[in-house]
Length: 244
Ligand code: FES
Image (tube, rainbow, N blue to C red):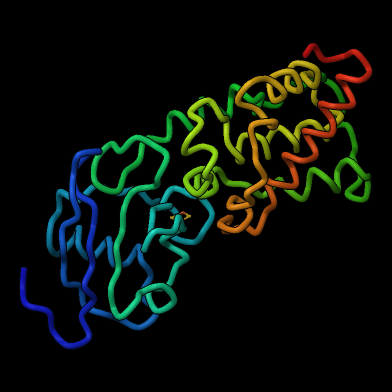
């Protein structure tokens, strides 16, 4: 590794698995440089064994999320100039997930919980039936719209304090997804999904710290979605539709 030149960034990047350590690199600073550009420079020009994940580079796929100076972010949409403190960057894999290698986190627990919370749409019609029209102005559709832009990047999951100390908690993204489906009248698994999200590790495990909506790159409010599930579960319980 060469000595730092004037204008270089001093970048610490996590290397190895859970028992790895940060390694230091000097990366040329450039105009409009993103954190993903920095990681890519290290992989292409300094150490080709560096593992990381990205696809779209434009904030659509969600695969580039990492921890940047202690905060979960999309690295493709994070300009170095906005986050580098004194020209210093520390880049690590997403928290609250196992590390595969270097900057690649294992997303399996995230998606297993997403499925456990009833994240899959359960159709009530076949492809032979006509498409059911739903107007954008319908109240349920308006509620679902507020959370529908989630791309499962895992930023909220990595930033959630409750996920950190409660391994059973399914997390904000899974509950946000469940809430959008609970407001979709075309879905046929409402009762099962509500039972799933009202069980241990579901919506009632949330302490409303609101880190999820603070960190969400899409400015969504999983906390609001979780509150909606709590209200819906309580009403179902009072109607005798949900077992304690
Ligand atoms: S690379 Fe797709 S969101 Fe960043």
